[in-house]
Length: 450
Ligand SMILES: *[C@@H]1O[C@H](CO)[C@@H](O)[C@H](O)[C@H]1NC(C)=O
Ligand SMILES: *[C@@H]1O[C@H](CO)[C@@H](O)[C@H](O)[C@H]1NC(C)=O
Ligand SMILES: *[C@@H]1O[C@H](CO)[C@@H](O)[C@H](O)[C@H]1NC(C)=O
Ligand SMILES: *[C@@H]1O[C@H](CO)[C@@H](O)[C@H](O)[C@H]1NC(C)=O
Ligand SMILES: *[C@@H]1O[C@H](CO)[C@@H](O)[C@H](O)[C@H]1NC(C)=O
Ligand SMILES: *[C@@H]1O[C@H](CO)[C@@H](O)[C@H](O)[C@H]1NC(C)=O
Image (cartoon, rainbow, N blue to C red; front, side, top):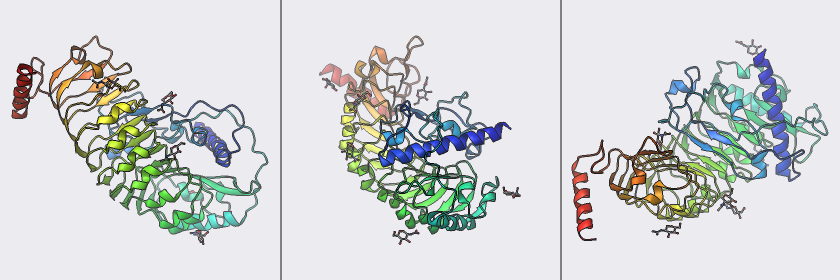
């Protein structure tokens, strides 16, 4: 019974979010008060043993994304994370975790007014094309253990599990397929060319399935796509550049797949809010265009990105959270990062960065800085350790040879610090290998001849 109620609730909230989305895309605005700014989280928790994800052995890193931009279209949007991940046990927080698949804008819907005017249930040409698309898709599905597509029979595609209809943007008297939500369905199969028929689709969420193959080029026709979440599947091939042709795309989630090769520079020239690329096989330099991006969150983590972070990085005005952990980035440390005034999470850990920390004193809102497991050296100063919003600063596993008193971990401190495995004389758990000897010799020389 509870499940039936929950399913019903989901469906209702999805339908109403769809309606808001449609209206905001049309520029009509939303009825009722605008809801609180959208919050979504990249879970700061662990999957419970009952979820399919835990079978992959993912642990989760976490970043919490608050104030997910002020853009109307996104704000009035879609799936709450409870809706997406009913099984996640957030009480069991583990800190040394990885980037979780599948955040989504989270929003409460209290406004359940009926649609005006009610769309006709009669079928129409677009629903007939959608029928062709879904039947082709059903053919391309080889395993559906939860029998989600079991009711994908007959012409009434709006009653199919995972399919959501709404009045068409260009003709409100027509009911059309506006969204697909097959998250956590454990389906194996591929995406057929016929999905290009779903031209009214605004939401495409198929995270945590076993879809494989490549993203069809026919999706070029889906000009209304606003959220595209194909995370935690088995897609392969180059970056699916068809997504760059979608004028309304805001939220792109490609996490936990096997995409490879370079990132197209145009990715950062699109007006996207969230770009999740982590845990793929991308291997390229990070394009110089990154400074142009308006995104509030970008995850590059656990790929094979190499080279420097481009110097334009400091121009990313809207950036709140950026995660570079687990790549082959190196050389120069991004000097301009201190300019990003609303940055809250900066994770550069587990790369090959060298040199000293830049001036970070402009990061007045930063809560988490992780530069551990690099080759950084020099002195860690008060300007970092006393940043006003700082909660966790991890600089272990580097070659730092001096730190201000405020950087020394202490039980009384409100800020979690980790200075272990550096070259800090007098501190416990330090490196004693030869690079350290060299760093310490340099440090002594600098003191003798300032
Ligand atoms: C601080 O962050 C590091 C890694 O970023 C994590 O391992 C550690 O558990 C965090 N500490 C606290 C107290 O949250
Ligand atoms: C799958 O679902 C369909 C429609 O809901 C139902 O008719 C069918 O019996 C189900 N199959 C299994 C194996 O449960
Ligand atoms: C895509 O749009 C073009 C032009 O509108 C149309 O000719 C083509 O059939 C569409 N493709 C699909 C797969 O619907
Ligand atoms: C970023 O936003 C500004 C203001 O809305 C807009 O003019 C600009 O084109 C956007 N840039 C990108 C790369 O989308
Ligand atoms: C930073 O955030 C504040 C408060 O949300 C906002 O007023 C300000 O415009 C933001 N700064 C930039 C550069 O976007
Ligand atoms: C560091 O940057 C801030 C502004 O972000 C500036 O006011 C300050 O003078 C700089 N400090 C040094 C030592 O360059």
